[in-house]
Image (tube, rainbow, N blue to C red; front, side, top):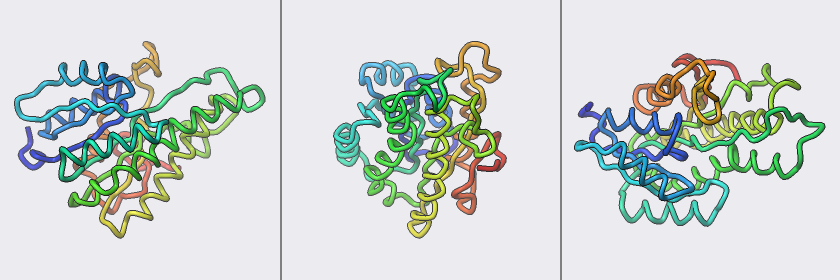
Length: 238
């Protein structure tokens, strides 16, 4: 545990498995109190039980990033139990469109992917902003992908996923500019190809390796880096 992070609180959407779970574990090891926000409260509670620590408070919270009422109720609940939020990590995401391109993907799949991966981060940030504003030097980290880089967009990239991560990158730039005056830093990061349900068993990185840059952004990265996109703790191009 690092004493400088004791008492700080982080909320991680989709924190019950994969990269999100590894981020929660890494932050807890540093001394953070962590809220695991998931669509399934039961799965969130299971993850919280696995992460039990004598040095940190760990809680599960039901939050569906595609449901504005769910987001509102989660923010209300956290306001009753916390006086501030130091770190928000918008990790929840889906990749439902492998093998599809813009000529054969449905509007419904485009809508679902965009609402989950991009617009969800906007709505969650809006709802928790009053708590973030109460923290000194609060940070927001958006878990993005190199598939959302302009130079990476092509017919071989899953269409909805690539467009949603492009939109999330744009969201990061705009939020960083909007929140700079409030002293809130906003970053985007790519975890790489990680062995998760989304990445598959053949992926080259462990969840812990995928989580590393997010944890660094939540703790060590300077506020002057707000609005930037990172991979392996290095700035990369949008």
